[in-house]
Length: 207
Image 1 (cartoon, rainbow, N blue to C red):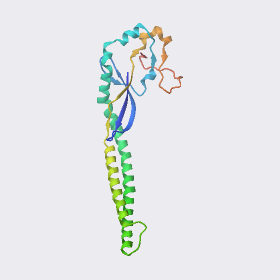
Image 2 (tube, one colour; image 1 turned 180 degrees about the vertical axis):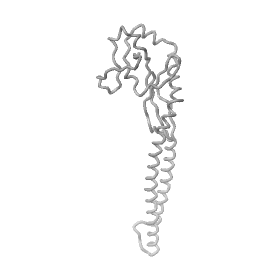
Image 3 (cartoon, rainbow, N blue to C red; image 1 turned 90 degrees about the horizontal axis):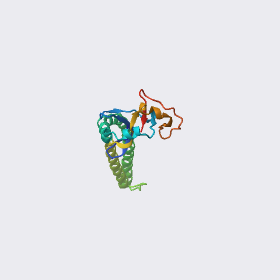
């Protein structure tokens, strides 16, 4: 059993979504999804010659590499497909609000600049000069363009390489039937410790 952290990042390199992922790798190199928390179905295997022999199995040497390759090819594309439309909707809403706010402010400054210019031509002294107001309008325009460019970058999403978090050798519980009294449950971090171990058909032990 191999556990990784899967991440989706935007065009700025910022992580926009993160989750834990788990897969099983068998002795033939076949990789299958393990669900969100497969360790809850496991017990800690007692130290024994059986366990020592299992840990020396030759196929374990490249099991993690096979798992990582499979996750990159088969699991991450689906994760990206889940995150992209949700994130795109968030960015579209942000873009709408940014454009509405900055364009509205820019138009107000342009209008105030025209009024100030008319007062200046009439020999009056406006609260703020037309030149100053026009400069602020131009600055707002530049700010809007930069903000929209950033949103364009944020809309470009891709997956990061998975980060290996944990790996465990999962064995049939039948291999340790005479030692189960010394086996203890495996609990996720934050568990109260009162969870009753559960088993799929063909219970397993974690080594």
